[in-house]
Image (cartoon, rainbow, N blue to C red; front, side, top):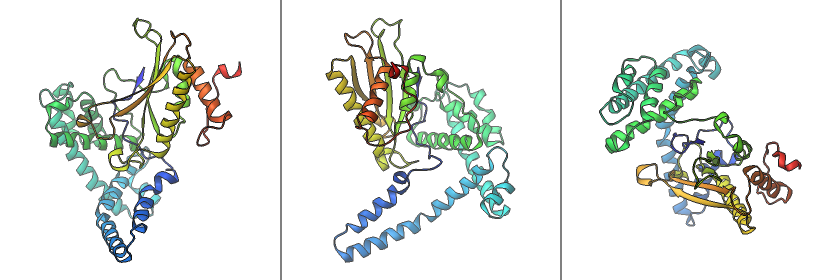
Length: 343
């Protein structure tokens, strides 16, 4: 089973080309609120306040820009000079951004590693984390940090320390992605198409194209468990509305909300037709996780039911309802239909 519920992938990674909805949501929301202020004097004052707020975040924007320049130099085959030429800025500006951001990352990683090395905080032995304190290469630090963080016990740290660990984990993942370096996997965790059970491969391909959701796991029946010998399941979450921002601040993604709504309706319709399939929803403790990121949805089917439906049949019928019956809310680049479609 491929299960991504606890691997940190819930934090949305900005896509290479964000869609118009994601890209413009925050600006459109602010302007819509401003335009809706009924009193013209209040609207002027609100516009001034909004403009002042925009000016106040320039420092934060500059910090993000420096970090982006630094991360650009980490890409395979790139140097400070090549990044300067690519961006049309001076090599001195690139060097300054790299120096400042690298120093901040190294200090952040050192602070996080010192926390993880305390007894009871991480299952990874302290002597295996210690090289990260001495490493001058931030990519080495990042990999060591993520290995220790993957088996961290949140109950062994206070709120301030937990915030440091979360910030360090986020930075480590970001710079490793920029550098094209594979992240270390915690013990027992798997990912990738090769880890999706053969029975669930076609379902995984379909869920990969559904908009605004993050597929989490595709579980096939467990023949060794008499209570679950016929059960298969698919789990997912709704992504945040704004890329790089959690649901707590931005709310759920519009398309993910609509896709989830559609899936829940479709499964219920099948169940009313007598098929052994149902929806479920559950949540991790929000007070131990990031509020807004603890909610999960799932579909479960029973191959031992009086009227069973297989994962292939489910996604075949889903595609048929969405496309052929024209009940889907948007066009999608569907994968090749399951073999059952051609029968």
